Image 1 (cartoon, helix red, strand yellow):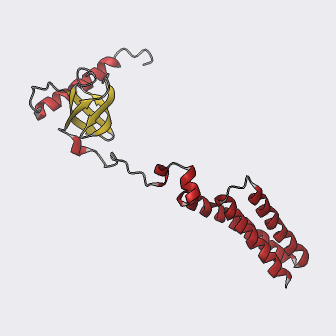
Image 2 (cartoon, helix red, strand yellow; image 1 turned 120 degrees about the vertical axis):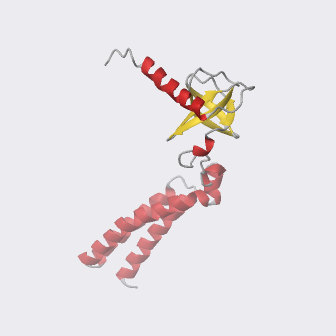
Image 3 (cartoon, helix red, strand yellow; image 1 turned 60 degrees about the vertical axis):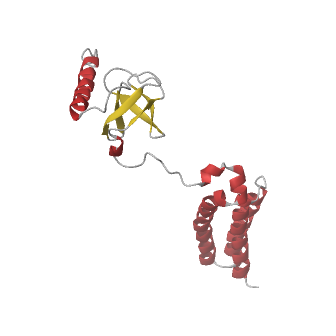
Length: 193
């Protein structure tokens, strides 16, 4: 058997042990064996072959080891051992129910305040929980609220009396002006200005 073949077998065995370390719990024993095999492959290539072959094996080890570890880490959560150790939900694709851009579909929808809105808090709208900011007077937990505006990722709501009909656009404009005037009042006496 030629020296290059032996060095190649050592290199491939080291890479295989790296993959095995990711999938078989060994307490680092397989990783140690992998390191020894990779170093042996490079040293053997330098000693039994020429410097060019030794350098090629060193470059191959330096390039392939991180690639093999990266592939193993990417595949590991989908293996039986990975699913057993990780939570099952960690391997499922995360879908954010609030990922739609703008959330403009929320304007005009009503919901329930799930915390005191002073001025921000949590509200449940159409079965989903949202971080919201109240416009106008504060709302207590359990109060009926309605989305009046969505600005980027900010959902602005207003408290609604249960007997009250849906607010008109003029009411929405007044609520937005109320928020602006309230912000002006809050920052009017800024000691750092």
